[in-house]
Image 1: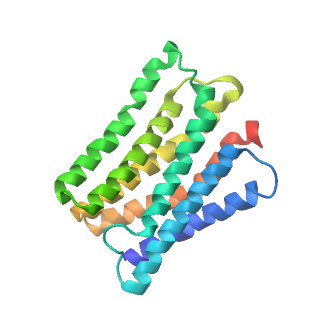
Image 2: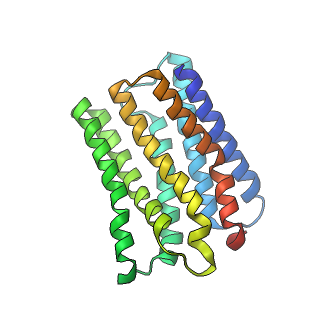
Length: 219
């Protein structure tokens, strides 16, 4: 079952990455959307590595492996896109936006709570250290996704046009945290199947949803 679930993740992320390359790398387009496409590509390579491990060894290597860098790298791309390109447009750091910044902190706090549940199960080990780094990246990006989801719109409708993208990106971030928890707590196979299907669907529609949102101001 694990083999087919990782195959589904790999195929869907490859399809999303391929669509992004086709749409936004043949001609000049916004750096923001290109970074998101690179993030999907990073996910694809990480999942592909895990799939090849299953096919060759029968299981995924415990502890650190190169495939983890693919998933971690995807969130670094998402973080860089939101922090460097978009956040300064939607939040000028004035007091009127302070409440939205405080509310957005709930997202990284939730990732911390989920990691604590994971740590209570597995204890201190290399896997916990690796997932702590992953949790940190997910927590940082989830802050921006939640803030950009709830903050008032600005000129050119930038916030409004990206709300659907930020919603699916926020959901995907927490699905990745659930993946970590599911692995630690050995939940029923049915729950894992649903989780991986949801992740695959989001990876497949990531770029089309983003494209629909930004076409009015960036393409």
